[in-house]
Every structure is written in C-alpha cells, then in structure tokens.
Image (tube, rainbow, N blue to C red):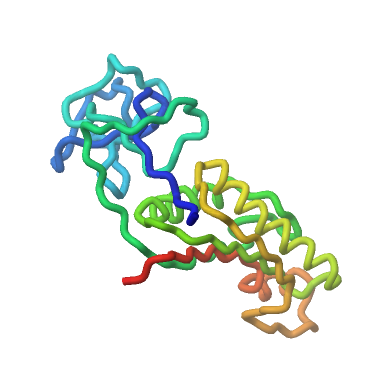
Length: 221
C-alpha cells in the first residue's frame, strides 16, 4: 500500500490556524487572540487560514475565522484526530518537487543539529507543499558536505544532517516513507582554491554543504 501524507481536520483547539470563511481582510481588536499585522488585520497562511496566537480559546472565535479547524499536516500533540464530514475537503493534487536547504542556513559549520531558521523554512516552504500532494510515493532526503575533513567523517556528517531533516518532518506529522541518504562530498557543486585561508575556503565551499528534499509522487499528470 502506498503511504500517504495524512490530511486531517482537527476538532480540538490545538491547531494554530483555522479555515477562514471569507476572502476579505478580517480585523480584530489588538487584544484578540489572533496574529495580526500592524494594521490590525489578521494574518493568514498561503491557504487563506487565519493564524491564532497561543492564547486562543473557543470564546475568542470571530466571524470569518471560526469555521471548522483544518490542518494540512497532522498535529502530533493532538491525540484525537477525526474527519469533519460537514466541511468538504479540497482535493489534493499529485506533485513532484525538490527543495534545497543550504547547509550554512540550516546547520552550524561541521554540525548536524537543525537551527531555528531551517525549521522555519521547512514549515513555510516544505510542509504546505506536501499538504497539496496526494499519493506521495516517497521522500528522499540527501545530505551533502564539502571536502574539508576526512571522507569517513564527511559521510557520517552528511547522513546525520539528512536524518535531522527527516526527523523534523516526522515530528510535524509527515507520515510518508522517507529514504535518508548521505553522500559526503562526492557531489560537489563548486570547487575552490585550496590555497585560500581556512575561513575563506569554508565560505567558498558553502554551496556544497546542503540537504535536498525530493518528493516523488506515485501519480503523474
């Protein structure tokens, strides 16, 4: 059976966003429990969803943002996930895409722990695109390093970086099969003069330090 990214509707108050009932701007008092811009207009996601603050409760719901809760990615902290049959789901589409995380924007040099900037990029640029897909066959996550250090050390580092990205996707509810690969420095994008100072060489080789997320769909159009 082909694993699918779960698209579910949350009926609790744990989701930070909620289906908007209108395309018009929605304003709320500055003390309201929704995220707002400087003009007092509630901010929305790329799907038109109203973003809630952490203090939101059912008593804070307002017209335009108080419909059924709809999350494109399951919330792992919500124990009870059920389908809301009253709200028709938007049909997901098949898709394939590759997303690159520049390692210098993702990990500290020679480290494999995702930084907060990288987590925000995954949440902003990868999870919403996954939510638009259906019948995802697999996700391949490939870690790359530069050629500084030993071949063995770079191989291990590339695997750890790829695994860190996979673990974060799973923590955000991505349930599809993930293939985690490390290729060390074997697929370099750029060569640099080794006579450069160490700091300049690190900077020059930055394009080689990356993690690629490749989504492969089982259905083609």
